[in-house]
Image 1: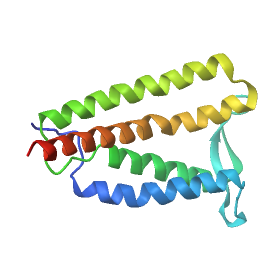
Image 2: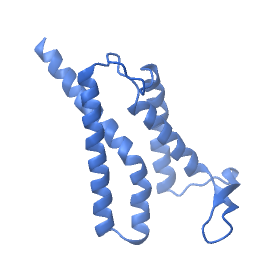
Image 3: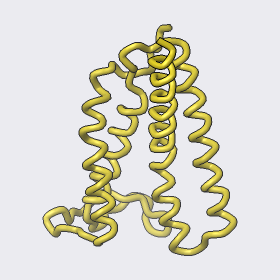
Length: 153
């Protein structure tokens, strides 16, 4: 099956090498509110209440980790397997649909039961959970498939 939208298989290892440390260090910096002063910059910003485009003083560490996590997650999620066939494409599609359902289920629950600043944190993490749910479910289903294929042989 021809899949033009997937990255080559070699990218998956690079994605994992970036994703795992970025996620760990990103969570640690959020938990301990670590913001090194050498990453304080005036950055372009869009602010609705004031002039539309302006600059603002910001520590860019969270943005760096956010970008690294998103890009590496996309690479891990959408890199080809060594043998990419129709069944793996089916697993990929089902995992993506499952991840969307779970992600929006959490979002719906959050709209109904979580408020104020806690809701902001849920929304921040919700940006990443779609790809993370997909990666977890796809790899879990793929490992189940490979185990059953080995068992049948």
